[in-house]
Image (tube, rainbow, N blue to C red; front, side, top):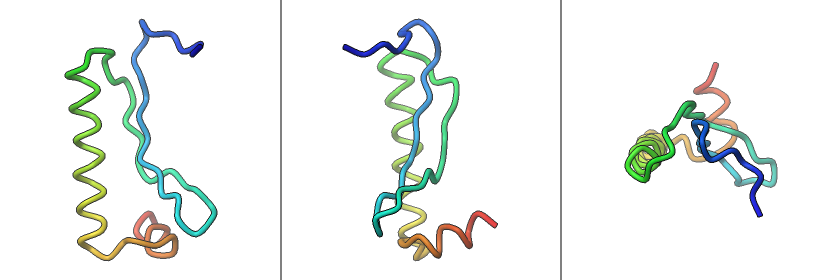
Length: 68
């Protein structure tokens, strides 16, 4: 059973999990708890992941370089 408060806004994360050392690439805060709000935030994270892949940011080194 989840102990998350389902009345408060959610936080969604885009993770890079390759190379054995996971890192958070993007965080979306204050996502409403409706299906539409969660779907919109998930679509935003998916679109970002596709743009990063298209730019060649598909490994830990490139993602770190992009962030700095």
